[in-house]
Image 1 (cartoon, rainbow, N blue to C red):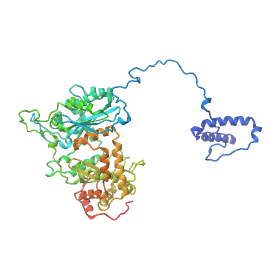
Image 2: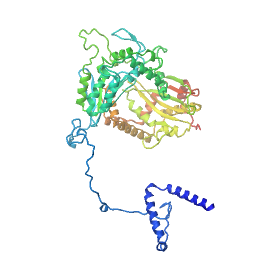
Image 3: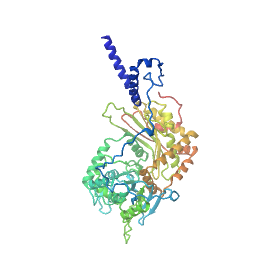
Image 4: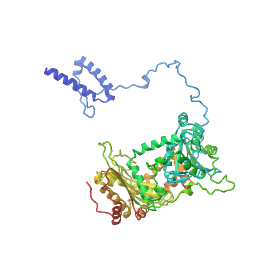
Length: 593
């Protein structure tokens, strides 16, 4: 019995041992076994040869070497070619021919190639068309509009009907209504056509701009652009569609990430009301449709907003494209939007004083600073850890400010992220917030610099998350880093790394066709032109340590904005205490372990 047990144990050990062999040695093991069998059949011949042993590193699982065979190409015999005819044939329309398809640009000599450049054309009605050809097989085209959630109104009287409606939350609704039914197609037909064309469509809105876009195979760009034009010019916006999308908004509001709520709080508190809460400033309006605004939204609200900001405002419309010939895009823009006229252009008597340009309807907002506190209900999943999210922001310049590029370099220098990261080059692991917050305080779940820019103003700050019990310590750490930037110059190493990372990020993102299309349209809509990558990189390289310190010093001269969201926000200091900390300066460095 003992021998049987020992034998069974030996077999199991041998199986386990063999299962650990590398796959590329399995064939060698089988050959070795055959060699061993031959050697066992002639024991006298093998007994005279010494037994060779090998180290663990050379051959860890066996005492004998693997048998390696080599074959030269001359020894390989090639069988006869299979001359059987396949039952499958390729359609002539799908086979690769010798004639170049018309939609593919012709090959030209190297010295005749031109460096891709942004081309801009203004149509007679004021619509601007900008594009860059990158010779890709997919084209991205779209329209950017000069209006956003900041232009919404709680009460608006439609000039054509004298009907009073509320347009609060319309941009969120219009984003969901994009590429639904139009005058010529139903929503299902548009989706089927886009699938047939091999393309995708989407829309997105911000506080100042809205974008419609189609990404489609180059040969099908004409048909896709026609659907894009219908979506913008003549959508049906039926009441049934509006009600369906309102239900979608309800579902979205039920599961909003706390970081988004915190960012919204920064806008609401940073640009608070100037008349005691009676009227909201434009930048202090909610970007997403709230539960309070949702019941007031109807199809009339959407039509009224479009009439006010879109239908009579061709100068606020930019047609952008990447991966398409500029002359082709101009032709498409002229065919689909060339008929649009500004308010009063077709009025011979000029009796109207209604100016519907979004630029005229933009009222500059004044930064006030303030506080936003939102206590959220507990997560239904008891196993999920709850965190308190804190953000402190300050005012910086907007899109037209000379502090724009230094603020971007500052954000990159601080960097940060979450406590979990795969690491590696370019992941920001050597940024200041990673080194001095996430790597130092084990309770810090995240710490990250952020910025948001608008036409007349912007916000820059630091946000973080942690367990509720240490929310006060996290807030203090954020304030200390702001004060450190105010009092001390950053190091040369940090500045060089931040400038290089920012340039790398900009250039890498512009390799994307979608990002290139969006960058062209937004720059033309904001500045009336587009800066090339060389100019942008030169501006980044020109940022100095003194520029960064000056940006922070000017920012802290104004009151801070504090936003906190979480299940327990009792330990987050009030904004008055944060102001006191900023006035007293840096605290003595200590550990919060």
